[in-house]
Image 1 (cartoon, helix red, strand yellow):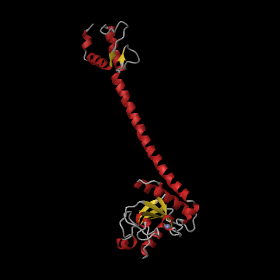
Image 2: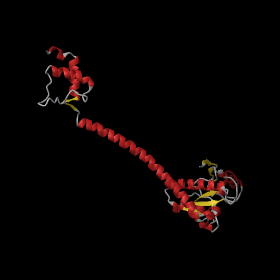
Image 3: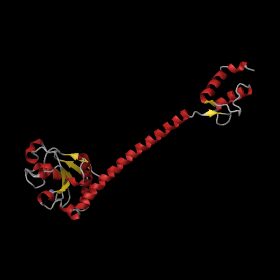
Image 4: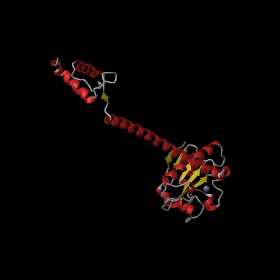
Length: 252
Ligand SMILES: [Zn+2]
């Protein structure tokens, strides 16, 4: 995974490196064709006086932004009015000259980063272009050697992973909701079908049993023809309070 940094070019270089305002329409993928780190790639780009530039450089550790996304960059080789140079967000993948593990990691980071750009802009995979699409240059050379379709699949897999993560978050929220609803439903059911106590037994709350037993012994409580008391909790409470107040003491 990468760390994101910004090393933006100074405004004094805008007229040379990114003179036009731009609303990006797609991403253009490049390989640097050298073995410089992202940081050095950007340093070199900032310091030279060629009208050559790019928005992002990605290596095995960093994604570094050099040019704001609302300005153009000169990377696609299709001229000042070319679609690539005027509408493309350019991503340079580092270490492509020698390849190897550093490059593989850089490519993975680029795929991951591009997947976040696509999501951010609401674009599908058809918005990922290669330098070659605009000028015919064989770039991104090593990514193409290894397989362009393979690279697009990497990006799509990162997008899917993100979707599944979202679904997991949503699932957690959903489970919490289910819990909340079922606990509400339980409470409503308790209110709807009030517990009714028919007899002095284990069902009846312990705090009520002495009072109810006493009232039955005194013949104050008799229940229906089957001896069913039909007392709900409020009635139990009331009887217990009256009992504590000594009301039933006078009744022999
Ligand atoms: Zn290129």
